[in-house]
Length: 149
Length: 149
DNA sequence: ATTAAATGATTCAATATTAAACTATCATTG
DNA sequence: CAATGATAGTTTAATATTGAATCATTTAAT
Image (cartoon, rainbow over all chains, first blue to last red; front, side, top):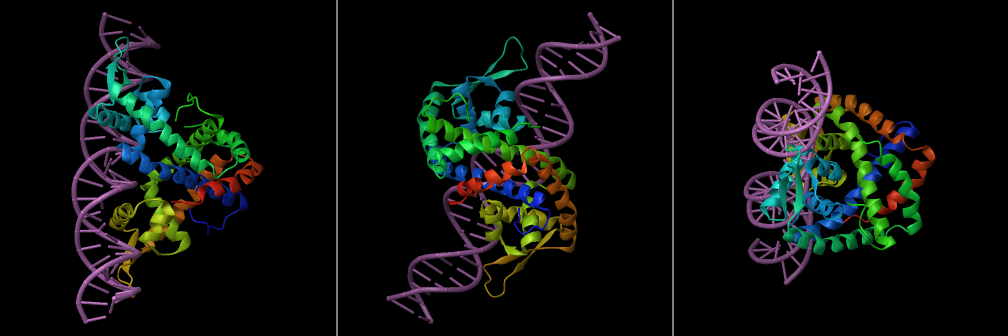
């Protein structure tokens, strides 16, 4: 979003914050790409495996919510992960509309090896900020990030 | 990224900030989707038109930098915008490697009508924060967002 | 109970996205 | 000047992404 826009201060501030937010995410994200691509995983594939790894098996709707993507997208990414043998779907027998996505043993090995490397990269990038700065923006970001559609 | 991860405080903080940042961007972005799709433009198409609108005609390399996407991607999105008659490429005669992307009259009308609506949505969403909060996070986000790959 | 509404998942078409290979053009420099 | 290297853009193959339509299943309502 252009910095040349002439609007009210309120508008200019809002736009600037949004641009800065986008660039922050992009900045961290681009630091992860080499590690992910070396591991042969996309960002979304990582996101799904990581969610299951830390929160346990869950259905695709929940996954969509976790990684902020559409339902149709999850179907595809889970398909691709299943093809690679990292996850498997298990149909819920109580309510057959659901299928729960689990990590396979291979998948668990994969993500447990990869996750620490990703954390390291994020910590590294976040090192641009002091702990105080991180503490300062945390609650404010939380306010803005909540109230999701 | 899971909140259940047990690591050092430094690691947990870094991860949490990253998740929050992502959710902020997603939150604002999802507020724009209805307006954009009603206008028949994608986020990237809007980004390109908006950049040219406020900063003037520029080459695809610069556009890639502005909207944080790859060169190949810009080629495609500009193609699609050109098909719709919103932009045109003009080959630079001094250095024929470059082609400069311009808005057509139609494109200019389009973006000038759309931009204020998008600003309104962003301001609306950013209203979750006080002006003071926005001022507080601005410089910190700037620090983190710089030093791009 | 039968229909109607809701919900999770899948499919489809259109567009986006990237990395890598490739083309064209320009700059360097030997 | 010719070879080398750098740079902008394009193409290609693989995956992602969305919204809308559809299917399957369950729940709610009359």
